[in-house]
Image (cartoon, rainbow, N blue to C red):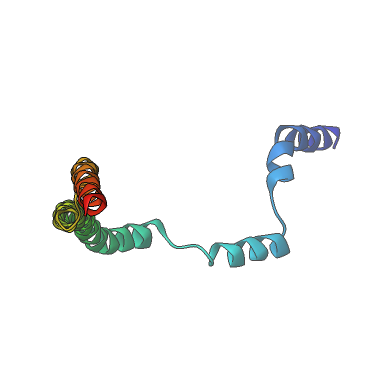
Amino acid sequence: MTSLLSDFEDYQVENGTYLARKTDKAETERQWEEMKKYALYDDLKDLYAKVMPPLAGFDAKMDMMAQGYEQAREMIRRYDEVILDKANKTSIKEIQEHFKLYSRITSIEKIKQEIDIRFEEVQQKHETL
């Protein structure tokens, strides 16, 4: 009998870690319910195979769209630059045309001197009369 008891004690010591890791029925059922929430690896691979090709196509379309956006942005920038340059040239031409209506200060001073000289001549003639 002592031999049977010592064999049982040896079995507990040797397999104590195994028994300590073993779960009871309630814990096993709880873990099983938790595992139902997750997909199987094969299902995940199938989903990946179905989803990745359309995503790759979508990514390529997004790249094309981004490139088209950059081209349109550059075209608008260049168009704006050309319109602004033409507007500046038009404004300069309008200012030059507008200035033609006015005389320069130097020509006004010459005219003023001529008027002063004529005025003095007229005054002298008027005094002599």
